Length: 625
Image (cartoon, rainbow, N blue to C red):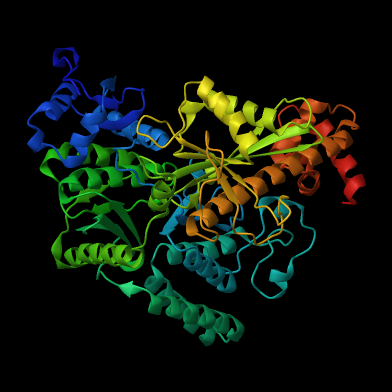
């Protein structure tokens, strides 16, 4: 890339964006002083990392976005990386599977929920969060332990508000039944406080207190209460046996370890709560070398922790990293400030202090090394790259399928997979206006909509169409008309392919289950691409196609139900199509509306109390409730 005129660049903080000849974003970076940072890219080539030199070979321009402070630049950089997933940024790709326990203390009788990190912000912001757990099995085992020994409610808010008699869990002593019984709130809050101690890692403190209460109950001859407390203590002691005591003090901290492998860099994180090692997670980036470590450390902490908006209480007050590179020290201080705002208290990012933290950092690095070695297999992105003979790995895949009822209620469903995992927050359903049962026209309409929203989400490495050559041509023509080039070369925007069902001996489409020789078609290629039957690549593409099919069929079924049953709502005086749509958007089905109380129905915009009572009466007649 030609060196820009540095005199035109501001000395203030901001974000810089490198783009290629087609305007695609290659790299997003932040800087406290934009002019100084960008000029550093054009010093001696030997002072740059291999990845940076490669990026500059592809870059044709650099754009800047000014910010008021370095902290604002940090937040903007994280947002742009998450949105565009630039090719030369170190992107945290699998950070959507963490589980947390959530307790909404604003409710009179809160329940313990398991939520994913993607459900953050909005109405989730008032609650307390505990975790994180990378293993859903461990999280659900803890959830079952809580409800077996601490009688909190399990039911959702809608069921809680409409229940008329206690459920089975009350009968077996696992719920106080505040839904229908006059449970003292202070007593319920006391039980909830015990659960919060458990989830905060303060199991030893909780066990000591329960043991004192058990002895007091025994002295008072309240033997049933003492037996219940004894069972709680035994369950907690079993939990303690599975947890490692790694710090003498009851500290909360996360520790990050980094290690170099022949194939790239591996990073591990261990989570310590109340001095106990509760969980850990490992990551791996191929193709990176030791010289990329400073960028990797900063990029990982920025992307991982800044996504916790609304989940501040799950952030520890101390994050331990192997070292803080001198050239990024100012950036780490800005990151501390941003994280402190999220947590509502100070956050320190620092190297290990003392032998215990040293050992835990080495443990995190060792865990990452072992995990990378255990998972040493050809990555699917590389297998697909080789099969399609593509210039780049095939990491992100979008698949589309069409569903309709004799040409009515036409829906296109798009699912997204990245690094072999579904990215469900990027799933989309498209309502299309197409005349007749014409899948070709529907796919073309979808392609126009997708091309128009190209900048709203990362563009995929592969778009997979459920169908054959005809469906593929319909989509390909639209993308070509929008100057989006499909192909395996370095100048292409993405790969485009179609997956069609295999054919039987008579040449007819074979739709029997278990077939593993579906055909893959590419543009401008008359015969299908050779995928060995049952190969991992083909099975993966079939899995994605099936996910798209299930997704669009499910949403189309809901649309049919809404269209059919909305007529029942519109028979209610004062309820027109607009209000019926608002009710379906909020509750999803008539069955869920029937479970809701009049007050919940009235909260729907435009309803009011009188209309809600009329709808409630109509639903009671329909469902007998």
